[in-house]
Image (tube, rainbow, N blue to C red; front, side, top):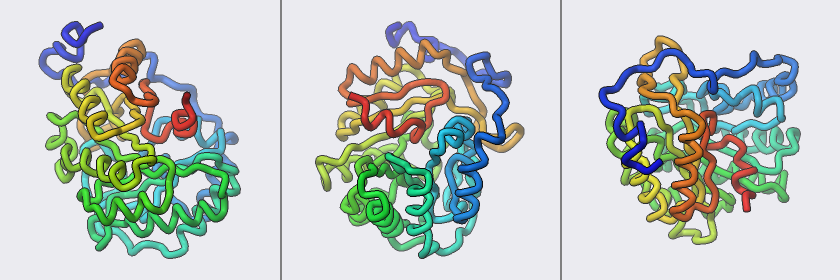
Length: 301
């Protein structure tokens, strides 16, 4: 299907989708499969994006004893229209968090550790130093493991990006989230070009560092806009891309509505188009999220 033929391109007026299609329905989770990971996370007083962002993959990932750690608290200083994380005035950073995070990663025997955070516009370094301390704590505890960070935009401040990049993660991830035309509506405190610059800075400061970004679909974008976003990411040297279906995190909540559910075959088409542009690896599917099966994507030949 070329871009002119795509239903995403010529879908007409937006119609809010309320009923999940069959490919987005999953079995009821088996509680016993989650207990080990849940007990460990809670016992070490850690946050995960799995819980805070109401990730649809929580059951699968936790049953495999994997999780994406969310540092710097559970309260974000920004309010994006797609996100379930709390917004407000955060607590100061927890100085012991890096060691507890490293301990949890060791208990789970993680080979690829993913660390993300809320956005902390209230901190002088926007949380970059805390990211670096968490990276180093994991490196010390699990020297054979690889580390991926999913960071906020840091307002594209070179010194903040440098602090994280120089700590030595293998993957530096920052999500565009949506196409440029939808940014103001969905990410009012962010900026499309600033996000691209954040990724570009990471590459400039450590050319060997793999960079990664993610896009959600189903919020009113067109195929042409998606292709432009792919090209913009490649222009700043982005290596890995994830593409997933936007799902409203909470029924009745004040989040942007789903405009369209993409079928699995269209995700395959988008993934193929992205690969043709030169991404080293692409994950594209209804349940794909930026840290979903991150280790597999990183090691994909």
